[in-house]
Image (tube, rainbow, N blue to C red):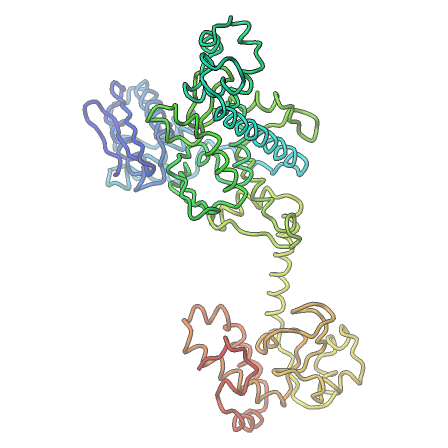
Length: 571
């Protein structure tokens, strides 16, 4: 549903992609016509017409409208957007903040896009360069390997210990009975809290008929309170889930139980809302699946004591041991800093680790580099991201191993471009003297002696398409092993030398390209065979037409005359 304007009172109402709604009013401003026009421009920016898709973002735009209306109203301006002039708008923006300038610029552009009338000079100014450049936000770098390991080990230790204690308390509760009848014991206390829910120390003491101090000192209560996850444990679960899954922080914070879709016993398809883009889904990694299953089991008992409206929240906790207050929903960031301090989690410099959940996501992506986990020298790409997002947010903040992988990819691509641009080496004669005369640089760079040059020119080093200067060079495969490249790859290889004796096979390859062109979409053909098809024509044009004509009589134009694999056959 698009955003809609309200006239009395003046305001805007919007429904966002996650199903939430928000309303804002701007009644009582000094420039109501200007405020209404800016609201019309804001409506064009809100989902589904624009990219604004959260109540907090709309609120920032509304604040910018209030600021602009009050500032211009204080200078005796009473009209709407159509009465704005370039000098007064430039004066306002030069004195404004970067955020408010950017917001009002976009709303004026949205107003014009919706059919609103603006002065031509105002449109040019709104579409031009900002006076207040917004500070560049550098992406957070990944955590160091030692910091990442400490964070992972701490969260894993906290969650594992708490779950073992929870399991033991459940077992004790199953063996226990009502303590008012069966007497005071750890199992009976567990039974009591499992049936009545979280209770304060005072309530438990009253139920047992003991004083508050005695109840507070009782070691038996510690086992009973292990029935329910408290906030310290829930924080560890949330952080560890981010470490394992790499989901954006706002997606983790707003997860609900209904977003967890089990596909079998070991697979979860998680549906969540990413604040900037909307609904997304992810097939969770195996470790994240196990952790989420453990958390659902750990929190099941406490979830049964939540009101109906909160039971669907995934992250729940007791505010503190021995308290009845249950928190449900996102883990507040103000809880995380004391959690780090309490567990003495330090960075590489010995200071308390600054725990940014966005940085956890960045590190997760960096650690997905297979050179760290599996020994490969190639990085993977997140299927949930475009190439631009991957580069802007992760490659610019890469770990050393990932930077090395990216540089290796770039080097390979540059070398491939140089190889493709290298002109073909074509012999017009059949003797070694012609080769040494036409390609002295190649002969020198490969340390070719007269005997090797004679073998190249005489056919002793022929492969299917050309003569190869060094089949063991490792250019297209392992160094020291015979080259595994397909026949057409030789067309762009700098080690290939084409002689008149290769004309027949080159014509067979040209016919193969023609059949592939008929069988494949043009875009796919150009991506796979395009450069090779162009090169085979260049080489054949260098030969004597009589040589090409004689070779054409030996071509049957069928796949059987080429060394093809079954999947490469065209008919």
